[in-house]
View 1 (cartoon, rainbow, N blue to C red):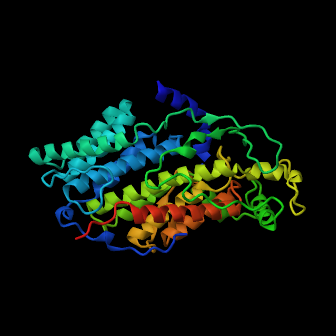
View 2: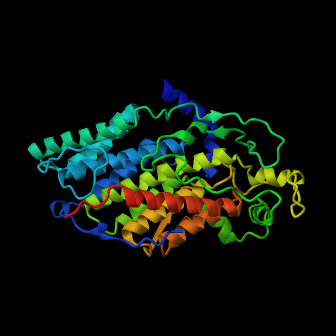
View 3: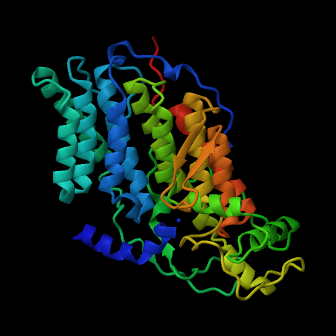
Length: 432
């Protein structure tokens, strides 16, 4: 019933999804081949990343926070299952070892069981996906042992997250305020989304406020006025200053960050540079960083409770800054997400992901990909590096009229901190 209630609630926010610096870390020895697994393709990791996306509803799902949590759980379980067979990195939860287990079976079973626990109604689809994965595995003791390892890995992750409270009602009212700078709900989503997520247990950070961002510029400052004028001019629905290219990438990056950056990772991992366990680790670290960036971002957002450009521009006469002027009919290019402005978690997630990807694969990796929210006339974009993509992703929020530039800059810094911490403190290579 709780899940039915959640689905009913989330239909309210369907418009949000329909329209939604790298730190220079050099790759280390993470790309080394693990002898025991080097003959295995990494396709099972890519396949179950896509299965998870489909199980959550594909491009139609509404709860990005729950999705990021589930992605992290899926990929941590897959990593631990494989690492139990051929230990190459520090484990996350599972301590068992079984070199005789089949790795494809273990990884697929771990992902299957994580997803089944959250989506029992999707059992037929998940069972079918598991059958496809196991079709390349011969019956016998290796398969049986692989299933056992996969189930234990999944159970371990589920046990760690069993009291998260992720399925609470995410729709909360906004306390009315006449104080300038205080967040107010923005039509058509005049509420605040999932305030309880600001205290969600992190996957890799030590505490939710570990990297809380510094305060935003004061309303009477030049920095605030500069940010105000830029988004007012460039993010206006009817802007004549925003170029067609800027409009295009504003729409391209509007989709939920965990959707886009898992696609980036699938595209990059398809190159074959990493083996099976290396790919499992990449996706586990990536999704830990994405999930924790949401939590850290929510902590900072609710701490500062700062208004969105929509409210700031329409009520500029209240801000005490002589360099700003109101526009009572101003509208952003795209619908404003129902949560506070500062910092931009979209920017944080993008740079956290880019930091992890660059740390493992190197930053200068060229790739092209589509987006679920791209303009049909230009569905694909190409990039020469992960950091280039992260910066454009952040810039897109100004062009869309959703964030002040200083919020995007703070988000980039937050993402860099989260990504670097996850990369340096989790699933590290085992000593030879």
